[in-house]
Image (cartoon, rainbow over all chains, first blue to last red):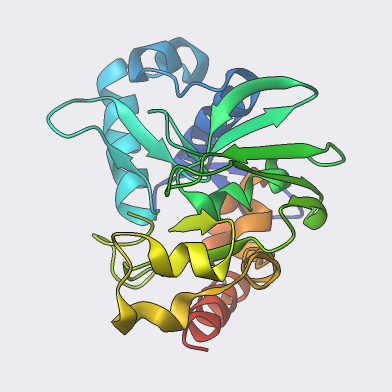
Length: 165
Length: 69
């Protein structure tokens, strides 16, 4: 774990430099739908761009996110994806976000507490699209009512080079 | 990790693999799976630190066990 940066809550360490960086990235994606470039975070975090990039790479090693191959750009920061996917996420009528995958689309509602989150996706067989609405983890609407999830890939948190891909 | 209109649609998908059929569940089952604190807590300011706590480790194990069902 990273060096300590902030200590609060009666002496219990609640934030590290990686926590602060993770939260800054997530906040930006939630606000805009787009993951920030590491240089954009430097003034916000008051550290060098190189240090931001170092932290981002460490965060990617700890979570099921990843960088675009051969670049220093954030490609996926679950539950969101910087590159468009079939899973469009809308809040208050604005479609600004893409989910990392169909399953992570179901977790996007946790990033918008109290809001109705819409998930729109095409049918992978080319038939009618599907539409879900969720709020705080509850399914409000499923069109059609028969929607299922399926993966042919392993998922989970124990194989760092595989999860959610 | 995809969503389909129905079980029949999933099984007609050209990338369907019968060996992974155990991952086919109604969307409600996957919603319950993604209620795990691993996903609910991503907006915590101390999320990465939390992941390493007993609570975070327990949530990770719970998620893994759920996927084995």
